[in-house]
Image (cartoon, rainbow, N blue to C red):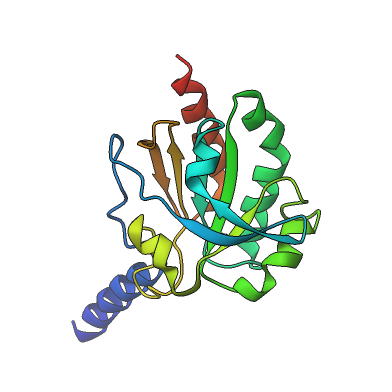
Length: 180
């Protein structure tokens, strides 16, 4: 019986490491405003959510760390779909607390962002904490949680899953739903 008990404890521990600290902001909630150091095509600038919302809806996607397999894939998928987001009047910003010293390169590499959308540094996961988007086992890192924020500044849609495969689809569908 003891080996089974230890296996169950191990599974719970593994799940808590992999799972985001999920208490994501719900639709209708006012999105916390933020300003962050960011990069677009390797060039530094200061990103301001309030300024981006003046142009239309904003997709804010949190990712654990630059130059990691899942985050590379997710950034590439957003890069490939950026014209679809622009066609809906939406902008995209990726935010991470992990490997922030690598964001300049990550933002311009074609296999990642390809210079098509900005990525912002979130040292200490301060912005991620405001959005309830931190990893439970590593709270100093962002989870993989994506938000659509309406131009009025409220959360329109949230999707949280450590697997990167559905984030772009979920966000694009939510942005399109704003126009209906």
